[in-house]
Image (cartoon, rainbow over all chains, first blue to last red; front, top):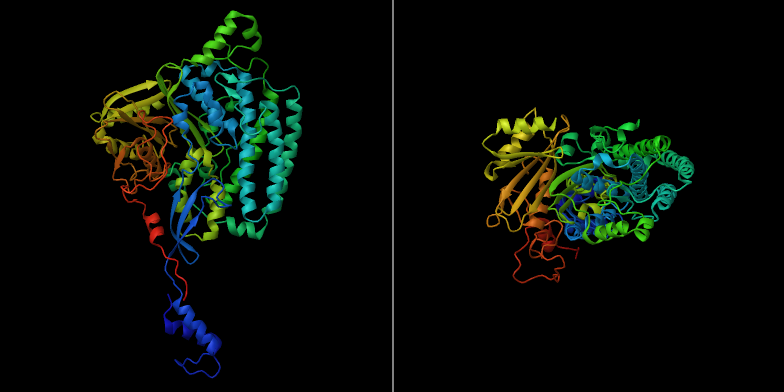
Length: 431
Length: 180
C-alpha cells in the first residue's frame, strides 16, 4: 500500500544514505526504475484457487482463497467433487447389499464403516445383543487395525506434504503390514465388505493370531521410527505448533468429533462414552491433547495408534471360540453346504438374496467411533427389504466445515498442513 | 438417562412439543414448525439438557403423505452423555424452516446439504447454496420423486439464476493485472 514517494523514500534511506539531506531523494537510475515499477505493482487482494485437483488436496476439495500478500483474508471451502449419491443408491439396494457402498465412504478404514452400518441395522432388527461374541471381537480387531491404517495414512501423507518423504515411506510400509492382515481376513486389500448383518463373513484364518502379533511388533517399530524422525525436527515443529488452532467450544459447535476434537482437550470418544460391541472389555486410554492445533492433532493420532494396537493385543487374548454370525435363517445366509444339500437352506438363501432382510419399520441411529470421529448411521425402514433412508453421519463433513475458520488469518502455505491434519476423506465427506 | 432429557424438554416447552416417542432406546420429539428455534435454544442453553453438539441434521421425504418432509435434528450432550432426536414436519408447498445457524456452527453446512439434496429452505441461513451438487443442477436429488438414474448434462443454462456464491463471483471478476 506504499505510495510513490514512500517507496522511493524507503529505498533512498536504505541504499543512498551517504551524504543525503533529509527529504532529498537522489536514486541511481536503476533504483529509480525499480521504485517506479514497485509503485505500479497491484497490491489489492487476489483470489487464488487451491484444488480440486491439487497434489496436497488429497480429497478432492476446492478452496477458494482471498489473499492479501501471503495472508488469507477469506476462504470458501467447496466440497462435493466426490459425491456419488450414496444415500440414493442405498434406497434401491437390499440391506445386505450396502456393505460395498459403506466400504467406499471412508476408504482408508472400511472395516470401521462396515461395523457402524451393521450395528445400525442390528439395532433396528433388535438383534444387537444376539451377535456372537466372537464376531464382536473380530470386528474390534479388524476395526482397530483399520484405525491404525487410517491414522498412519493421515499422519504420513501430511508429513510427506511437509517434505518428510522418508516418514511417508515408513508409514506406508507399516500400513502395508496391516493391509496384509486385513487381506488375509477378508480377501481384499482396500474394500473389505467383511462385516455382515449379525456377525462377520467368516472366521479368522488359522495363523491370524501369530501373524498379527508379529505384524503389531513391526508396526510399533515403524511408528517409533517416524516419531524419532520428525518430533524433534525444527521445520516440522514450526509448521505444526500453534498453526490451525481451534478452541474446544468452537470445535464442539462445529460438530467436530474424533481426534480433531480430542486435540482440543475434550475427552469424547464413543468407545468410552458409550461402549458398544465389546469395547468395555479392554483397558485403553482416551487420548487427549491441548491446543487444538496441528501438532496436537498429530500427537493424538500417534498415541491413538498405540492404544489401538494394545486393544488388538488384548482382544487376541480374550477372544472366545464360537460362531461368527448369528444363527437365524431370515438374517444370515446359510452355509454353502446347507444351500447345496437341503431344501430349507436353498429356500433361505433364495429368499435372502431375492427379497433381502425384512427389517421391521422404524428408525434408529447407531454411532461408532470411526477413523475421524463419530460415524453414525441414521436408518429408516418401511418394512420392505430395502432401506427407506440410510443416512451416514460423516465425521469428515463436519470437520471440513470448520476448515474455513482455521485457515482464515493463516498463510497460504499453512493450508496444506491444516488440511492434512484435519484428515478430510473425500469419500466420506461427499458420500 | 435419555428418558430424562425427553421429559425435561416436554416439561419446559409443553405447547411446542406435539408428540414424543421412544423406540429402541432412542428418544424423539415432534416439534411444532414455528417454534423449533425456541426449542433448540432451550435444548442448547438449559443446563440440565446442555445439548452443546448438533450431531447431525437430515431430512426424510415421506412422499405421498402430508406434510411431506420431516427435518430431523440429532442432538448430543457431552456433559450428560444423552441424545435427543427432534423432528419437524414441513409441508411440500411451503418447505421453509428457521435456521439453527445462530446456535451451532455445524448447522451451516448441514442445512446447506439439506437444501441441496431435499430442497428445504432455511430462513435466516447466511449462505444457503448448494454444497454437494453443482450450481447448475436442477432439482433436489434425494427427493423420492427424483429418478435414481436421472441424468443432467452439465451446462450453464441461460436462464440460470446468478450464483449466490460471493467468492466465485469475485473469482469471475477478479483481474490478473500485470505490470505494463
